[in-house]
Every structure is written in structure tokens, then in C-alpha cells.
Image (tube, rainbow, N blue to C red; front, side, top):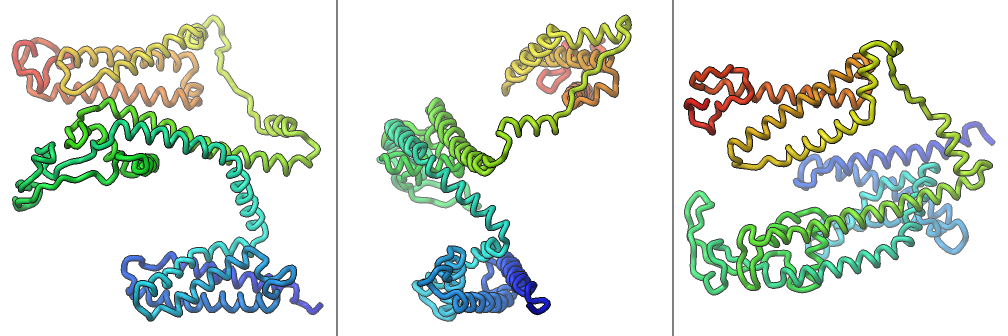
Length: 450
């Protein structure tokens, strides 16, 4: 063999890989809005060059491998078939690029197949090809297992569609004039104030784009809701629905929102996670089959991996058992103290949930007092732990850092709030300015109580 002959195939593959990379960059650089822009015109001529290179490669491989009739032929390889489809689509689109007409535009849309060019890289890299095929085989194998779950999915979708038809059929009508709720009243014209100039618009009785008048439309609407796109409007229309063939009323039946909560729990959360779990389990099974030839069992390999990666847990304890630090440490690590802090966190969460808009002043004052009490208790916990563990050992734990930042933020919030309240002019009443419960507020008129 002459010198350098072994490296020539690798060099040729490298040239094709570079052309594929440049072609992919050119595809990403195209302007999809202005199709006749100068940049697109330059990229069009570059596309001619790339397509010519790929066509030359395809023809050479057909001559070298043959077409179909013998083993190892060109069309007996799925990756070669993919190359043929991509190149042929580009050539057909170029052939009709100068023509006009609806059918011709449909043919020219075959240029979209150019987006498959990056997949040509998989064949040129053997390791990538093996990995991609294993992933594809894993997905196909998992799809066989998903069929049973898919039947249950369709069954539940039909159940929810039937329930939706019973709840909302004929209730998704509306008048363009929101003041009219019946079809017989939705006549004539009304004044539209939403535009810059007031205009008279004709009243029209319409139906929302997505509705539940029959099972098929219910399935389509529920599928749209499950995608997470545009479902808030469907939820609003459902909550505002009143009676059949009547217009909506804002917030007429808020309890119907429970239907969508249950639907989201069952479909976007439960079933989607089942599909993902099946694919993951199948991938793990495929990996176990590959590793079945290993001399060690799965549990033995797991034990070895754990022994290699395991790190010992460290726990600080003061050495002098007669010191105040040791007594404080014994107190903060005791189960009663931990349970007490957990109870305080739960009660603090409940207090935070008790806020609502336009609450009475006395009610807000009570919540404010409770917030200061909880902040004081958590601050005391933080101080005790710093004394027990020491400053360095305390901040080595990420959860302690999180607690410290939370307490510091709560204290800052209380101080900033009180400073903002104290900055409001308030008549003298003998109450110190720093007193946290001063009733100097915009909501309380100035007087002796302030």
C-alpha cells in the first residue's frame, strides 16, 4: 500500500463533515421574514454549492455501491435513503424555483427537508451513530410498552370530554356587546370606546373558538388545555358560563375551576410523567442487558460505586462538656427543640396565608404582631445555633446559611417597613418613634390614637 492511502478516506469524510457544518450554519443564518433580502440571496448561491457537493457524493456512492439488488447496495442503508430524500427534495425545489403558482409553491416547500442535513453527521461519526441508534431503539422499545398506557389515556380523555359536555354544552356563546346576555337582545349597534375614536359597531352573537358542544370538540378543547397554551382563556370562559344559549357573567361559577385542576393533575402531570418514566425504565433495562455480560451483578456494582463516591458525614460537638457552649449545643440538637421549630414554621406559614386585600386595621395589626413574634423566635434560634456550633461550623452547612439569610431578610423587612411608616407625619402622642405598633398609617386618620 502506498503511503497516505489509509488516511484518504478519513480526509474525505472530514471534508463532507465540514460541508455539512457550513450548510447547517447557512440554514441558521437565513432571514425567514425577508425572503428577498441580500443576505438570503448570497446564502441561496451557497446553498447551490452545498447541494452540488451532496449530489456529487450521492452519485459517487450509487456508482460505487450499486442501487438495490445486492447486499450492501445504496438503498439498503436507511442513512443513505435519508441522504437521497434530502438531496432529491433540494434538487426538485431548485428546479421549480423560478415558477409561480399554488402547486409550484407546494413543490418548492420541499426545501424544508434541508433541515435534515445535520443528521448526515451521525453516519459519518461511528460512535455518534451507535449512540443515536441505541437511543432510537430505546424509544421504539418503550413505545411498545406505552401502548397500554395510551389506551388508558384515551379512555380518561373520553371520560373528561363527556363530563365537559355535560357541564358546558351550549354555554360558550357571547355577544360582542358585553352588556347583552341573550341572543334576542344582541341586535342593533353599540358604541365601542376601546379605540381612539368612539365608533358604532354592530352587535353579533358568536361562539368561542373552543367549546364543549359535542364530544369531538370537547376532545379538541381538552387537548388544547393539556398543551398549556391558551388554556387560561378556556378556563375563564368556563368560569363565566351561565346557562345554555346565554352570554357569560364574570365569575359566575368559580367552583368549576376544580374541573381543570383535576384535569391538569391527571393528564399534564400524571400521564406525562408515566410516559417519561416508561422511557427511563426501558433505557435502564437496555443498559442492564448490555451490562449483563459483566462479572459483577447490578447490586455489587452499585455497592462499589457507593463505596468509591461516599463521603463521611461530619457533626460538630464541643469538647468541654461543662461549658455553656456544650449545654447550648445539647439544647439545639435535641428532638424537642427541632419539633418546636417545625411547629413554629408551620404556624408562621398559616399566618402568612391569612393575609387578604382590604382587611381591617386591627386584623392587619394582629398579623404584624405575630410576624414580629415569629421573626424574633427564628432570630433566637439562629443566635443559639451560632453559639452552639461556632461561626465557622454554623456557616459550613448550606441549610444554616439559608436560615440565616431568611432571618436577616425578615428583620430587614420589618425595619424598612417601620422606617417607612415612621416617615409619615404623625402628631405627637408620647409614643416613641421606634415602637413597632404605632398606628401612624395612611389608612388611619391622624389623631390622638396615633
